[in-house]
Image (cartoon, rainbow, N blue to C red):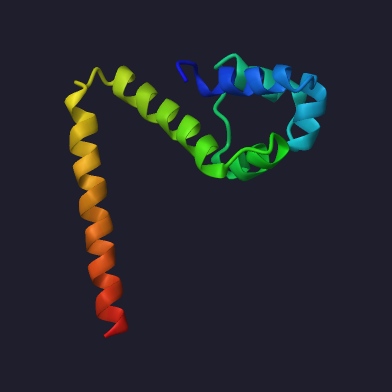
Amino acid sequence: MNTSFGEFIRHLRKENGLTLTKLAAKLELDSANLSKIENGKREFDEKRLEKLAKVFQLDLNTVKTEFFSDLFAKKIYENNCSPEILTVAEEKVKYLKQKNLKQTELKLS
C-alpha cells in the first residue's frame, strides 16, 4: 500500500466504521494520540501491532509488513539513501537467517 502506517490505520478504522475514540479504546490508547499517529505526528508503538491485527482481524504479518516498510522507508528517505540499500539489507537478512540456522544446528548436535 502506498500510504503511511498512520494512513493505513485511518483507512482500516473508517472502513470498519470506528470512531477515533472507539479504536483508541480497543488499542488502549488516548484518542488524541491515535489522531497524531494517523496524521503522522507520532509513531505507532510496535508493541501494539498484535492488538491492531486482532481488532481488524488481519494477519499479523500483513500488519508487520505495513509497519516496518513504513519505518524503513522513512529512515531511507530521511538519510537520503539510495534504493540499493534495500538490496544490501535483503542480503543481510539472508545472512542472519543462515547464521541463526547454523547456530541452531550446532546446539542440536
